Length: 360
Image (cartoon, rainbow, N blue to C red; front, side, top):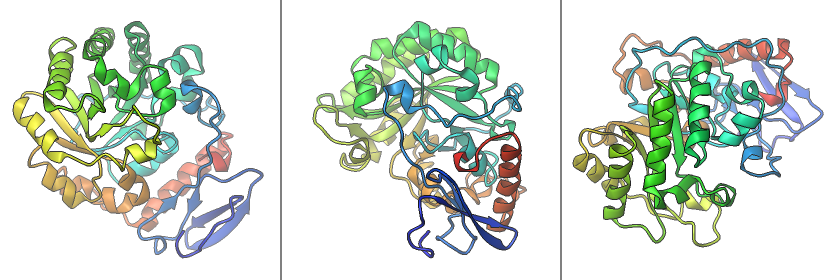
């Protein structure tokens, strides 16, 4: 990306076994395969275009694909590694193609889907939203919604598809999500969140987790955060909380991107939460860039969730993770070349199944 300068939105740079070719497509490309020496560890840099014009459900619609060649994933492995390192759910980023790519570098890191609304699952094409490659395990489905009955239905459906975890989004600050009365605004209703978690837990054997902020504007005190966690854990039965170490600003007009940057990070609040709830699994999220930072946080919390760094510099974040974070000394350390070759085979299989190259 940096070496080539500006890449045409209708070009796909494809690196394959030492040869670099360019293919033209009829619509804006979403993926570029770069040589391993380019772009500071960017094995793959994906260029995406947003075409979301509908409500929250429309935002999670992936490109239309032929799914008949895929199958529901086999049952989850009961001996999964702990959530020491996770890749955050990121809208338009952590689709099944990206998750396969990330899995080529780490077999133990937990992967999370883009947020999928309950309406998209109940009334939409379930295969289109929920199918994934078995190699993605461990993989969690993040749900967006506020109706316990609907969330329970979706959790039950997700279990049949083979997911390893159900995660409830209580952290997204976007206007569309807020207008749907879910996401970060649910932090003001801990009893409702608890009921949602309890309903999902009753409908599935999968662990149900919650991803949330340390607060929202107007509810920024530590006492209110403690009340939220206590209510959701004791009334709802939740045992795992993924905590973005920023508040979410909902009361004034700022973008979701600004909500990831403007509110200051307060890691000490998440550390304190773990001290006050030692029996709960507390995973820290927000602003983490390197494995060394992850390692330092793991002295204070149970796990770390990485977001943008796992997308911008995936090789740097994940290639050493199985050894450095999970302690698996026998885990393979793939070169960038090997990652590219693994992706090339995946892309060829997807194309053979009818998936357009620029959808990957």
